Length: 81
Image (cartoon, rainbow, N blue to C red; front, top):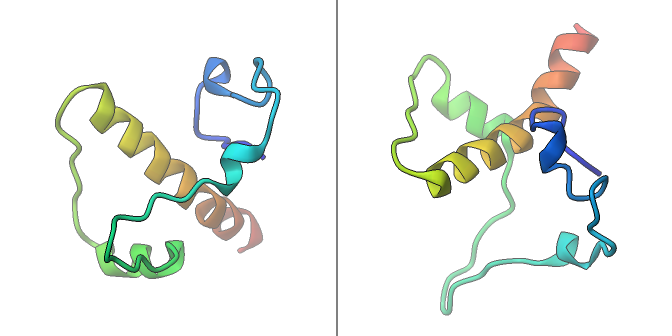
């Protein structure tokens, strides 16, 4: 499992990550119930809007993570229609 939108050197599975346990990691703050991310719903909400990520490498990591989450939906959209 990897993302087509990241650089080759960022591919954890290809370059040394020996386990897949991290796929099961879930960040959940105390007293908060987070719903599962729905890429289709997100794209509908932000349709026609602009988005900017400002900051350092942490903001860049957030942007790349979002792109990876959306790439699965966008890839199937562009190549199935």
